Length: 396
Image 1: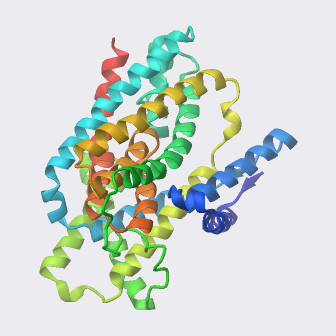
Image 2: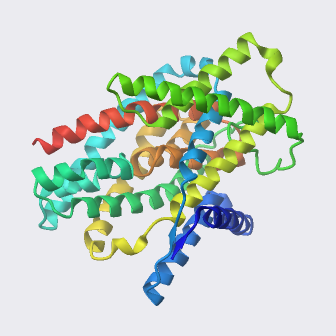
Image 3: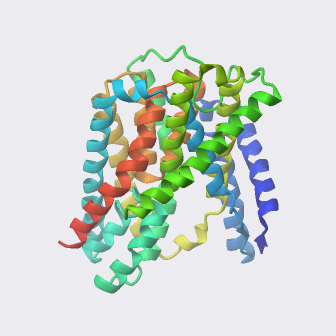
């Protein structure tokens, strides 16, 4: 059964509410900052998988609006970002880039190692490395023909898609506990700033808004999206290929900072709260749709290899986030938030990283620099660096 777009969107709202209800009633989920969208989306995916395995009934959702929600989300981040945070965080940005690139190499070595131990072609492990985990589903599909036609690995795409699916789930689960552990272990001083980049703090849910504040924020988000589309066309004309959300993020940063420093009177009193709420809704709905659309039954037949490689990759990600990323970024609250986002960058997607960080800041306060640096690394640098790393390993 194929569920049309309107019904799929409505079900996503229901599952997001369900996730919030479950998290509100579970002190353990709140303690480890597990996002409501992850709980609701994974519940939906589990129900869909049960229908398939028990009744042989396949449910497919039309989620065309999913990509638009992602663009609104990144435009909102850009509009609230201050370039001063980027300038002062230059060293952290460089360190994070180096760490992500280094981790891609490690992912591929682990993937190839597990494949070799299990008697498979070592290069099959690349599809369970940076191709599918750091790169995601899009990179997996893009590199599929190379692995099939040039390397003779006929089931490369299936392994990559399955690994990417598991990576997305794991990334959503481990980020919050990593930050919660670091905050407790090091007795970190959390933020007193309740003006979050995404959403509002859990103990301050009742925010005074008027319709024009939301509408004004929506207007400027649309302007950022329009400029983002234009920038994307310019970038493509040069032969580069970057995700559209990167162009929307850059457009948002440009528009937000120009208005902030040159046209401060054009900022509506409730605009920032409106932008934060629209971004929060867009991100939550995006992730619910991403999870509810997963076809968990496609993991069948590959479980032994997938479980082995994901155990190794997840263990390495957690250790790297705690002992390398956190310490290298300054061993403070912002570093803990970015450490929570690191599994999103390397196991899931940039959006997953932001979901993890949003869950932390809703409990412990704002981390503005993290919300600027992580999307820049995930959008600008990961795709380019990963292509170079993959090319090197496939040519070995």
